[in-house]
Structure formats: structure tokens, C-alpha cells
Amino acid sequence: MEERTEIASLGEFGLIDHLTANNEIRNSSTILSIGDDAAVIDHFGRQTVISTDLLLEGIHFDLSYTPLKHLGYKAVVVNLSDIYAMNAIPTQIVLSIGFSNRFSVEALDEFYEGVYTACDKYNVDLVGGDTSTSLRGFVISITAIGEVEPDSFVKRSGAKPNDLICVSGELGGSFLGLTILEREKKIFEETGSQPDLEGQAYNVGRLLKPEARKDIIEYFAEAEIIPTSMLDISDGLSSDLLHICKQSNTGCVLYEDKLPMNDDMKDFAYKLQLDPTACALSGGEDYELLFTVPQSDYEKIRLNPGISIIGYMTEFAEGKNIITRGGNKHELVAQGWNHAKNK
Ligand code: ADP
Ligand code: MG
Image (cartoon, rainbow, N blue to C red):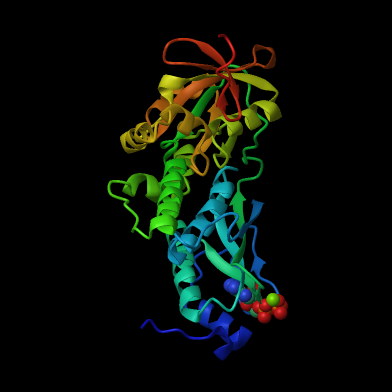
């Protein structure tokens, strides 16, 4: 049988020591880390970017199909993604957890293994947190801190008519991964048969092990691109693009045939009789960067194969539209697009 160490055998301080014993510091801006009443961070004349997330078991994640190590990794990555979406570099995180007595020390170790793997990959320091028991369910709260050159952070509100709309990576896979895992969970509950995830590594991986687009922010610095607006796609492309339009007071034109979609995503969508375009537009949790740049940056953007140009911004009065493969124009709505229009 697997070893199980009761958390009570360590006590709260023993547990914190255990979980943070091998914590490494990677950034010179981290002046004081875990062990005092608060952490101390140097700014070096840069501006500080802060973002926080609360993740609740049963609402944001399902432990019946999410390995704890993946959960720890993802919890960190989705926070870092918010910092990158400001065109900033994340440097520190604080991580608070609440857990019931259902959890053992070994379970928390697995979770922290994922946390430390992400910290290492993205070069951020874990500098503090809080630890508590909860009555039911696992609770995770993460705050990420980053830095940016004065006034080079990118908001959602700076897009201008004629700017190019760009997106990194591929869309829709995470939504299909979730659909597959929820379906297999239901089959398991009803029939006891083991999940069939054959050929689903891509979609399931997009859900359980997302990455933040550090590489794109690095490319911006290298190519001297400062997007006019940006966010990371958590709700779905159409809903998130509408946020940019609203805050920038613009309209937009999106092209269906320009949406970046992986073949494994498309194949599985067809199998489930779903429209891949709808998955790409409405599926959430892609954690890709959606941003706008002036047309003068076209050549620079084109050189990066990880970025697709999917449309352009327009005057507000022109509305928010998508041009389908067949050349028809539809109004873009948060769930995808409105099929009823133009019919
Ligand atoms: P306080 O009583 O001031 O809240 P704690 O005893 O909760 O202090 O925490 C002691 C130190 O350990 C602090 O530096 C805190 O940031 C850190 N810490 C507590 N819980 C965690 C955790 N789950 N992960 C990382 N660091 C933690
Ligand atoms: Mg505390």
C-alpha cells in the first residue's frame, strides 16, 4: 500500500517547513522569502504587476481526473499567464492552500512537485503563502507578481481600428479535453469501465498541462513589438475578443479560415458532432495570448510561426463580425457567433 503520513503528525509549522524545505530562489529581486511575516521584493525602478486567482475543488477542478502534480503545475501557470498578458515578466508567487483531513502529506507533496516544476520552468520564486485546514474540498489561492519596464505594460483598452488581431498557438483543445474527461467520468460512474483516452493526448494535455506563453513575450522584446492591447484567453476567443473591443471601443472582423486549429482537435470535434470552429471560438482555458498590433508590425508578426493573424479591428460602428469559410458575415457573440443573423 502507498505510504500515508497524516498531516497532523507534522503540525502546521512542520508541514510548511516540509513543503518549502527545498524551495529555491532564482531572482535577485527576491530580497526576503519564506520564513518571516512577509516577503520583501526589490523593484529596481521597474513597475510591479500583480494578479491573483482562487481555485476551488468542484468548481475549477475535479480531482477524480486531475492528478495533483498537474493541478499544482496548472495553478501556477494560469497565474503566470495573466502576468505575461500584461507584457510583464513574472518573478514571484505566493501560494495559499486549504485542505481537509482527506489529504495526506504525500498528496500535498505531489501538488508541490507540480508547483516547483512550474516555478523552475518559468523562473519564478515561491516567496510565501498560507496554510489552513478546510471543512470540505481543496482550496488554492495564488498571487503572482511580475515586473515590467515603466509604462510598457499592455492593457485591454489600447486597440485601434485597422490593428491586426493576432493569437498565439492553437485554440479549442482544452475544451475538448474537458469534454472527453467529463464523458469518461460519467461512463465510469455508470458502468465502472475504465476511461478510453486512446489518441487523446493532445486534447487532454491542453486541459491538464497548459503552458503560459513566455516565449511570445520574449519575442515581443526581441522584435521590439509592443501590442496595442492584449489578454490571455481563459473564457474563449470570441468572449475575450469582445472584452478587447468593449474596452478599446472598437469593432472587429475575424476570419473563420484563419483560426489556428490542431488536427487532433478537429478530428475529435467531428467525432462528437461538434463544430471545430465553435470549439475554437468558445472553448475556454486555452491560455493563449490574444493581442492587437499596428499594421506596420505585420512583417515582424509574420516571422513568428507561433502567431496567427486572424482578423483586424474596425471602427465601433462597424460592429463585431466573423467572416465564415463560405464568405458570409455573421455577428460575433460570446458563445461563438449568431447563426440566426443573415438567414
Ligand atoms: P503567519 O502566522 O505570519 O501567517 P505562517 O506561519 O502562516 O505565518 O507562515 C510562515 C511562513 O511560511 C511565511 O513566510 C509564509 O509566507 C510561509 N508559508 C505558509 N504557508 C505556506 C505555503 N503553503 N506555501 C508556501 N509558503 C508558505
Ligand atoms: Mg499564516
